[in-house]
Image 1: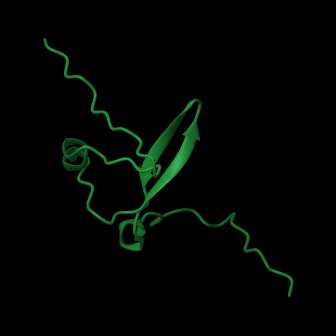
Image 2: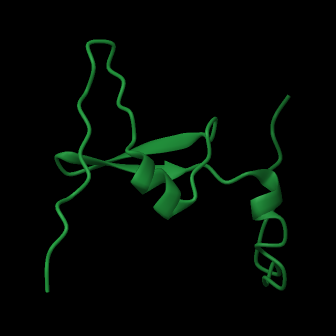
Length: 74
């Protein structure tokens, strides 16, 4: 069993990182896709931001009987 070395990237002087092509292909990430950065200990999670189409139907069948609507004061 051989272990593949982890994909790495270097932070540029403009604070940019190019994500290795193999990582993008493996994750099916596309050019122009938006990501959120979430602090995790001394590291950072990079999560793709879902589109509205990706979220459509996610709560289908959810029990909303105990949900209260917020009323904003004007």
